[in-house]
Image (cartoon, rainbow, N blue to C red; front, side):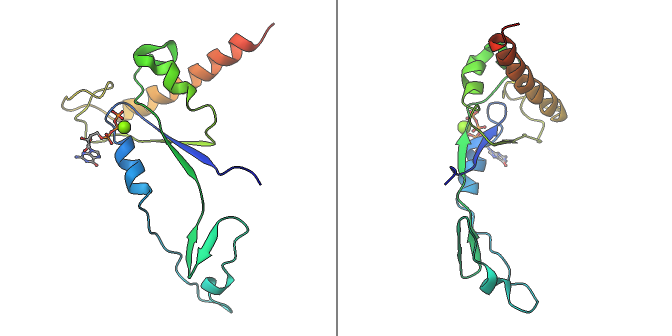
Length: 139
Ligand SMILES: Nc1nc2c(ncn2[C@@H]2O[C@H](COP(=O)(O)OP(=O)(O)OP(=O)(O)O)[C@@H](O)[C@H]2O)c(=O)[nH]1
Ligand SMILES: [Mg+2]
């Protein structure tokens, strides 16, 4: 049996990662019975997870990673240690604060463009992976 998928929540400090994790783990979304020859609720016999009266539950693990800042891949804000926590993740969810009231380090500001966060955080992760590969790759 393979292990459950591990999904890590990433983002700058105070972007709402822990809040998102808490709300996701209280999720109660339902699978609505389908119209057809047999209602979906009866056909719901998953190989993975469980289906209880139309409610499908799929086990996943969520990882709340500490906030990353620009320069994290070089160790800024202990970023390389936090990035290391992502090694076993199957997927990442980037939690972005779109209010424009926190800067790249999570400090209070006004009029900040949140699209900048999407760029630099992705770049930090890519550069960290590249750095790890180049370090181990003896050429
Ligand atoms: N206005 C508003 N505030 C929010 C929202 N989500 C989270 N917050 C607040 O933002 C602050 C930071 O939220 P956290 O969930 O702790 O953020 P985090 O990304 O886990 O922060 P670190 O673990 O420090 O990196 C808290 O004071 C939350 O109450 C939201 O949707 N709207
Ligand atoms: Mg947190």
